[in-house]
Length: 324
Image (cartoon, rainbow, N blue to C red):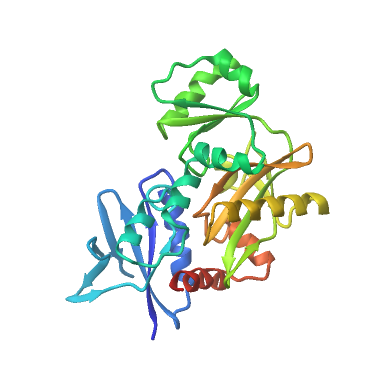
């Protein structure tokens, strides 16, 4: 009997359009023989099932069901394709846990922790995970530019603490540009993280649970045409994403070991994609994404393809793991 799969997409953040693309790729890729797939749009003002004619039917939040032409539809599993809030920060995971609904991403705590860059890096440092020098600011804090530069140096990166797809991030080269960069970051979040610039090879490492085992995917090297791997570089073709990365065998082994160690320390499951920069030949962790992009151009599917895993196999495995 075919399983009913709810693919949640959209969300409350600036990433919602990218999430809709990811969700539609999942919808079009899942086996029609094995699953009945349903597109569920999650927005602040509505949760709706969107049918093939783009007609909308409201979701009953009591049990995450939907009524279509007098028939109640319930779901066997949720495929999470929401980048950013509320799909990548723990809120949807907590909701589905409460109603006992299997879902494909990591659990609530892991999702919330990894979405908060500052807390995630602080949790991992005692385990010997290398990171950039950092300085934290909350909205309303006094901004001491000299103190910031003394801690992290120039150039530096000013980032929204809880945002993805490079929204709210600026590379700052001069002291006089620091306050404007901070203002940009505060438009995305009320917490920010300012990090030292790491000059080295940037790589993205996918670690997933695949067929019951933790699997490190082939590494992707990021070469941005812009000053850094910003939104344009990620989504508008202004970068090279080279899979497998041009690393030495020693570099490859080091970053694979660290990426798997991070996945295991955090007791992750589902998909993850972690970003690293090599400094003095050692991988330094920038952040972890737990609902990475799933479009045909996205990094994780590229890595899966290099490992001989098709999109259909990648998505099917996530559902099978969730249903266990």
